[in-house]
Length: 337
Ligand code: NAD
Image (cartoon, rainbow, N blue to C red; front, side, top):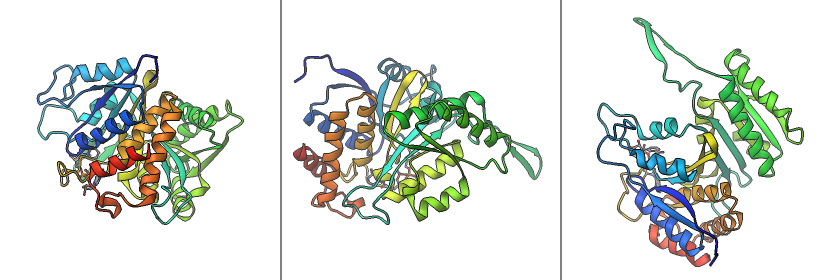
């Protein structure tokens, strides 16, 4: 209904249940009249020499050009001579931060009903630098790389996110008492950035203590920023607090402001093609993409329709204890819109 040109966004439906849940997103976006035109790209069936993976160069160019995209789960084919799909995306698009909003879904009962956290994980270095080797038999080494550049970049993103999303506090999660140099540098960078944001409270929390606090009372936290490995673990812990990976959205932020939203679950081969998948995580990921585009009205409407549908409980997929199909659940969301 709007006269302005539609925004182009890249869509990777992905593998397994990917195309089914991507269809659900397309349908919900059409119903909500979101001014987005999808550029669909599938994972190729042969290796593209320009990317050394099954992802085509054109699909990466599409994300670079559009600056925003949505990605379904991808199953990396087994075999030698190519790079993992997710790794290719991360490296080629320089996706340096993984952001996961975790909030309790009203009406879907878990141990807590007051979870409202954002985890921000450094996504390019740390313990995941891929530098492991054997020194001599029986002795191996793994290198944890922390750089000032990557630490400042993710810290800057965390504070910027807090400021632009009305958040009050950023907690840097670390183990600098043991990893004095690496986590020490990470903290130093967070501290430096914090000084530029006096309106945001900054604190530093040791990872073991953070885990205990999270499971005792998740309301103690607001935005958490951390190095790669801690982020991997803590973001799954937080997903568990709200009911699991099928409900948790995420968004990857890349160099130059690229945002590639994705569900955190896999391609669920056990239920693929059976119209049983829960599209919630991909839908809520699409909502984070809309927020990145400042389409907050559309984002709010869609998010409310999803939450109301789940909360009413009449239409729920099997993973949430219901018996609805993907298409019935999607239709219920559209009816709410
Ligand atoms: P998975 O997340 O695909 O499945 C784990 C379990 O959760 C299964 O029982 C599955 O049915 C269920 N499940 C997952 N998502 C669901 C949804 N939306 N609705 C209902 N049930 C859901 O994990 P896996 O089995 O370890 O991995 C399968 C494939 O996915 C592998 O090839 C793996 O490499 C890939 N994978 C991709 C990503 C990604 O692209 N980001 C992430 C994880 C795994």
